[in-house]
Image (cartoon, rainbow, N blue to C red; front, side):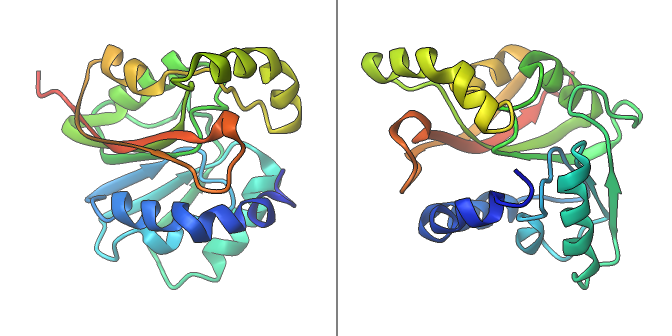
Length: 203
């Protein structure tokens, strides 16, 4: 995946994902943590004035490419960490903004990952996300269920049937902004996406 990901995604990045990343990541503030940073494709979209920027990437092949991306960046506030989304070695209530883009489809446990994100965020902290989710159309949903085991083998354990926005709310977040859109140029079974901003409740 590390050697081909950027090439496979370049058309979709140009047609929609790049603009979406710019839209949502402009709202990142303070101490920022990105889970599943991959090859570092989000790096150009982060605001310049952040307190810190930590990029988590557990896959060693992705992390090598991420290191090269960071090395070529002019930013001096970046740290790269190998943690998984389910277990991050940082204190409770320590992060202002957590970012996840096209990552929660492939974590081992969506629920555990969201609980970890909630734990790490300061009260009132922001979770910024962009994810593909379970289709609304019943026929497409059926195909997603059928091909998901095979798709996961080819696409880095990617799951097609996760209802991520619902799970974000179930974790205790308040979703302040949510946009649903079709990913241009993507296969039908991964077209439906949501992106937005959720807030950790103050109490």
